[in-house]
View 1: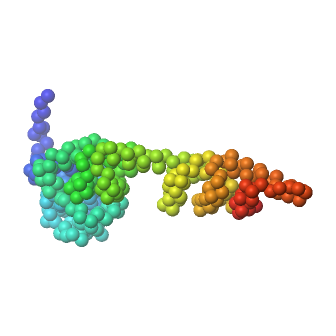
View 2: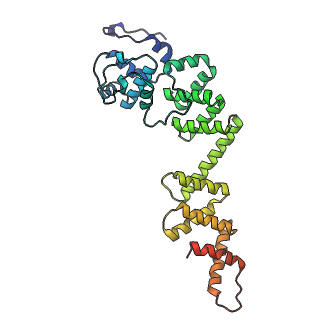
View 3: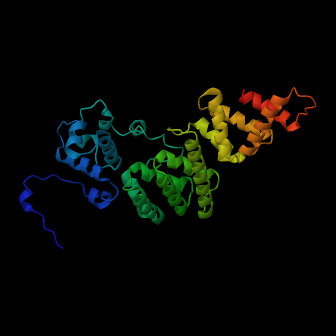
Length: 327
């Protein structure tokens, strides 16, 4: 199929740097291309972020990110950017190290130590020199969609600085995507943990993902048992991990939860944990163990004044527990 340009609309033209077509048609997002075309078309005109946004369909915060991207790529300079009427005049200033830090989107964490924030043109050079990086970008793009500058920097950091293998990075990002946790800071935190713990092979990565999945499933089961509508806090999650590591069955955790509601009429992970520890120290491993001890305790309490009544040693062992949490 052949295409011909409609020359009738060429009455007004403006230039686009050749480097954009040569190096950035794939690297830049659609929104970044739109913002660049608008800025080039209205070079010299005063305009606002809202005006750029309304004419391009790109959100104002993404307009700022796009301008920063093209500055880092050396396509735009303060001299050829229209005057932006906004309090955030950072976009009109030379791009210093301080400006880069301030200009990061609010939902991104601080750049990790030893992580270089490469510009678009530098990333293009890295891609030319590294087949692994090219393949990583291509595969990860298929997982996350079009990659932003920050995501590309993150991948390079995981590969070059952390030393994670290509297949391990892909496995990690695939897992994060599967649990809908594709925030760059979240991915980098797991990547750093993997590097620190020498999880750098397919088998080790798969084992770790299985462990993480098991922990998430266990936590989800606890949330269901406790009728929680919000995700556990960090402190609550630590309790959940302790219970999992201790091998507590969900049934006995749920029973401890019911006892907690009976006593204090609210969910308290700390209270539930104390009950579980007491039961465990008393040798009660199952709900039936606890119920048997409760039944014997009540029977013993009823008959304690009867003559020749001998108290079961197991009942005495349970007495301190039952007194703390039931009466």
